[in-house]
Image 1 (cartoon, helix red, strand yellow):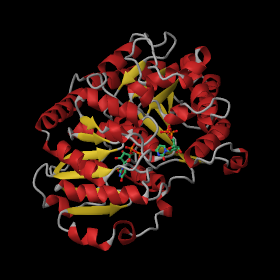
Image 2 (cartoon, protein in one colour):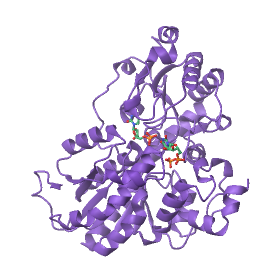
Image 3 (cartoon, rainbow, N blue to C red):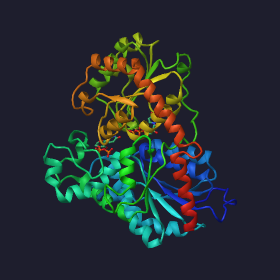
Image 4 (cartoon, rainbow, N blue to C red):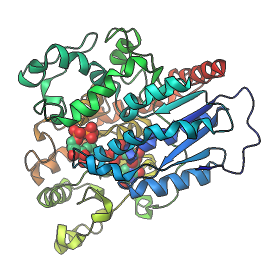
Length: 471
Ligand code: UDP
Ligand code: UDP
């Protein structure tokens, strides 16, 4: 079923037509919406596939508000077959949804062929790389991937098939650093724990990461949400083909620009706080902490003495968020921190918060979109990686000077981090003048990447030119 938006008249013949195929979850969806809006404003004609999924109710409102603010972008409704769930091999709701989408990808060709304008390229997520490369090749459509992680993590994933075929035991068994050509050695301790589980039953690796990584040589290019200055060595190694000579070219186009500063959820309390005085604490849209850890964070924030804005999640899926603040934190905490801090439930407008002059630091899990947003605003981070590739991102922010990483806290849930320690680190983050200067420098470089002649601006213009020629 194709739903055309009313405004389709002004498509210029020479403008490339790009179909965006994002995957569910804010961390996956957000970079797609941003890049779609950026290319639409650079004279590309854009169709965005809106997949009906069940995992992320927040996606729906994000997608609808995106389309209402971008009437020039066409919406292609994609009904996936939820019944495929019965064959699923995982109980992780996100991986499960990725699987269902992969099983439904064969429904795409008739939809794509029925579009009124020929498709110049399809931009998909890595999670559908393997199933989509063949379909795109059959249709004669160049297929690009929009990477939702750091260049560091992308390059590691791209190299995984080699690591696994040559040295599977070395990969999971040994404690030594992992060597990847052209890149700094990867400490074993920062590899996502879920990659290291025993192979035969490691569904994430065997059914998802490796097959998609194997298909990368068939992809036309990888758009990276990172910029040359931020990850110079890794990006250079990928560009020179030093990691693997058969990988597609990478196009560093980050930090992707917000497509609008969303209005909702304005927090007037912030306006009353002095410049750089508030620590913003959030662990994204999918990470829930244990009740004990939540209480310790509360104690830590109170002891830090700094004003705080804390987005509190006690459940991974927002719909299940039932516990009350009183129950989680206790009345006395809420009473004693009433003037000093704000505890918020649900989603906030993070871009607007990070852009606010009152924010002086950001305690975060270092999921990649958050990193790029902090980089754009030059806000120093205290990295507390919880799972997945977040230690790799923490390494990146440390090297770039954007933040400090509480290495001894380990992964989320690995041990209970005490309030006293949290309070000390928060004080260190907020009081570290050198870090603040370095983080500002990151912000400047991020802005330069998108000035006239900036590295990411040039790459993005190059892509539109390249796709025009394919027309
Ligand atoms: N986000 C937001 N408000 C929230 C949490 C997240 O606007 O309360 C946005 C955030 O700015 C980012 C995206 O959601 O653009 C995804 O966040 P990220 O990748 O950092 O973490 P995840 O939510 O995937 O763990
Ligand atoms: N996970 C999560 N929030 C995230 C990322 C992952 O709750 O933002 C969960 C994920 O669903 C799985 C576990 O953490 O249950 C391990 O995640 P993984 O190492 O696979 O990281 P990912 O590749 O999903 O970032």
